[in-house]
Image (cartoon, rainbow, N blue to C red; front, side, top):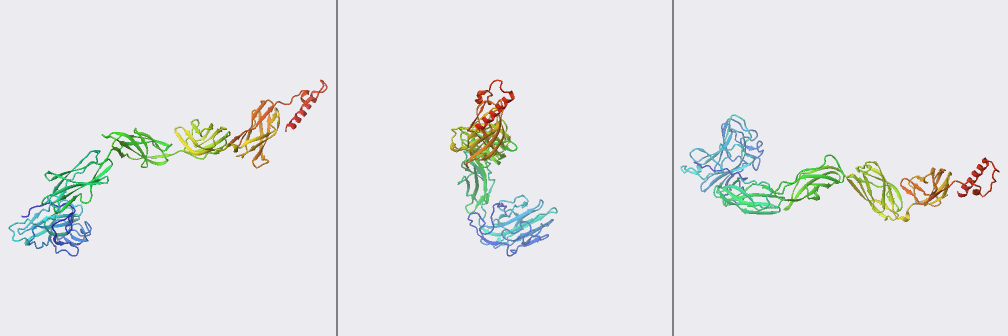
Length: 603
């Protein structure tokens, strides 16, 4: 009678070098099944065990194209029991015969496979090392190629000789559905212990806020001989370590991973040895968990497009036993702001911006929150026109830009000391005209323009230039420099500096400017304006400032005096007129003549 043993679930290869670590048992017979069928014997109701190139199921053998299978190119047949017998080599002198193989299977419910051994008293079911996956045998899916070890050393003592030992695979299918089948490859016979310990039930540690540690790991380990050692290995934060696990009874072992810093992913795995063979769990990967401090939640901002230099954000504090001392706001993954409360006005660059926040704990920074994408537009200032002026000058400039959101009555400007801001005429949301008055002592040099409208503040460096005063364009003369009430004539204004356009001329209250003509001056730097005017009879007397406005700047620097109309007394013309010697009409004629003479003398 053959004693049942257990199924090896580790990723072993049942050929030389299949063990993790060093094994004392070398194979003395190997059937790789690539060049031939190994003289395996297929029998049964349908004889569906076939050797050849595997096209169905796994699509190939374990380490080549060929293998034995119940369905090389198709699903297996139903309502049948079929056998595949393995030639057992001479076991004379073999202290502990062991057979191992690789297999792949996809077997539907109701169908099954198993292993039988005949040591002289007929075939009996034998369990592989660590048992079958189900009480009925191999069922369901193997989940890929898997190794199996069968211990053949425990035989019926009544058998005449181990030379008569027979081994076969049995596959049984009922009348119902079928699947891909059972495929066998790399069958080998060894003498000795070839099976490493079986590791199961390894603790899957959850992510944790526990910064103090340690983190306990438990695992179940069994072996067909003895478990000599179990090692817990880990890595995290650039540090690796390992420690021997301690047995706690009933095949379980316990170990500890030391504490780690927050925002650390810790990987760990277990190695077990029976003194000859070593296994690892997971076989070719690691389990992981994170040590972390929690992230803020519920990050929100304004809906729709945001226009401005900042965007208001708010969030909820993380739930944690650790104390939060502040928050860090990130834009595009980079920290741009630190605050102490769960809200902030974060700087905006424009276009689509991604924002996130993380809490700062006493122990360090926490995890980053979910990302909030903001469709933002940054108000920008364009060029100022004109962008230069001289001390003592008055200019009208045009301010323009994009997304300025100018609202009449809410706009303010600043150009620094010595520049007085006059009336601001908002034309639309992105442009305005502004009168600037430069003090005589305004310091020459570039100025930064700061514009504020509502909640938006925009700056533009080097937006305006105060020029040296000695180069200032100005009015240098006027001829004549006096006019009389009731006059209708022409005067000339002389100026230094260029004009942006044909200007308007303001001669003060009571004087109407009928037309302005620009003519060449006597030098390249001077210009003349010929002005036709009409003085009202009641125009205020006295001296007034003459202003020339070309739309960009206002020129001053000369004055004009308004005098009384010509007197009608005899003393006014220096001629004595006898009383009653002339008619009223004659007197009026004399007055008109005297007026013409005066105008000609002053022109």
